[in-house]
Image (cartoon, rainbow, N blue to C red; front, top):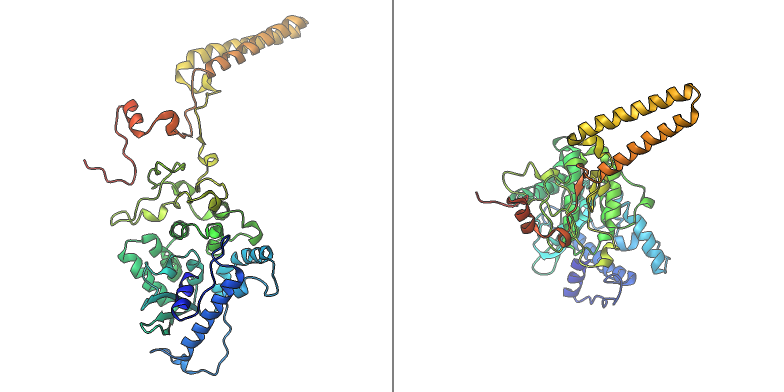
Length: 423
């Protein structure tokens, strides 16, 4: 939309004024801008570029799918109803573009081929479902004279060009995404899923989280198992977590947090960003989880905490230490007490049974309750002496201090992952 507005303004078409609240433009504003882009496309199609002989055939009919006209019913006037319809259709976006005969790609930069990683078109979260399975691509390239020309190419060749650009900048997760689309046998689903999530959230962050609530819908249809459209729409992080839960049979969840660095001091996440891809660790990059980042404002995340694909319930992450209720049985130091307590309990139960058989009911009941209550009290006392030794503990700075303080307590230096430490 920003590129369309820029092209419209430079051609003398004055875009509407930004709305003070909600999205940047109202539905009517965006449809007005889309009409201009449709005229721009028709103008480019009537003037064939080199290698575009189809443009010479002007007597033809084309059916063009534009988001602003096709995501909601044209007779709808209620903003809430239009937003509800758009939200539902966006969950099917991957299917829509998968069935398209050809996909037009454009931006406002003169001479842009749209295969470089700095192209505005390539930094949107919707770019992946738009182009990943496209059979044919129309590159709308803006000339220096403000004229636009269309250069058709195959979807495979277009994705291979993006692959080359990704390889030059060591963006190996992006390289793996398009490698999987070109040759699915060359990249496993384990690598493809991780790479898709990493790239989608990188673009979400690059877009200042403007489309954050559609993060899961942008990936729906690209993973082995897709979610029902009605199950999405509960926030970007929640939708993404649901998609990963549906596809947990296609990747190893234990490796999601394998290569994340420490979080920033301003972040409440217990994991930071993945280690940047560099020559030498490119084979490790695909098993990195998504970027656990904090949106710039609370409204964009709907009050949700930063992304954690592996939740605390899955790996036993707790906010505080916990007493070991089975400390009598789990600690080697309590072997002697455990043997004595177990022998006393067994002897007391046996004696109670003998007394019960001989008809001495009340002595049997008294001995039974005495030994069992005494054994439970011993378990309680021992449980206050030991802590659980399984799972992970989150150590907040407010209670435990920063890393320097912990290093002093431990007497050794802690080396964060992903940082070059000189020996």
